[in-house]
Image (tube, rainbow, N blue to C red; front, side, top):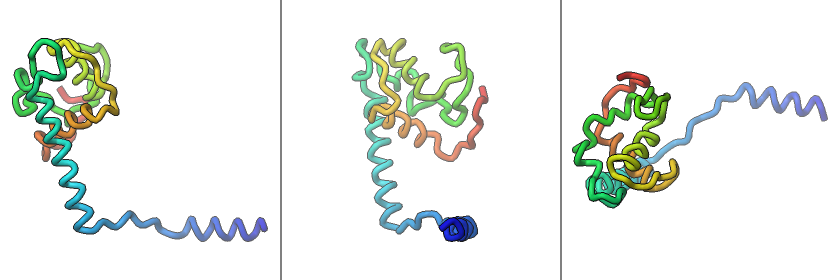
Length: 130
C-alpha cells in the first residue's frame, strides 16, 4: 500500500495542472455581470442613499476621481494606518455622508469597488503610492 501511495503522489507531482478553460460565452457572461455590478456601484456613487445628510460620493469624487484604487493597500492619514480601499470607502460613508459602514462582503461594497476599479481600468498597480 505504501509503495502504491508513493507512486501515486510521484505521478501527481510530475503532472502539470491546467488552468480552467473558458469559452467565449463564459467571458461574455462574466463581463456582463461585472458591468451590471459596476453600474449598480455607479448608481450608489451618485445617490445620497449611503448616508443620512443628502451627500453622495460623486459630489467629492465625480466619476470616482481621486480615489486611486490602484494604490491600495496604502497608509491612510485619516485612519492612521495601512488600509484597504473598502476601509476608506467606509470612512467616507461614516464621515462626509454620515452613514453606516458597509461590511466588506456587502454587495453594495462590491458594487462600489467594481465601479471605482472600472473607472481606473488600465492604470498600473502601485500599492502604497501617494
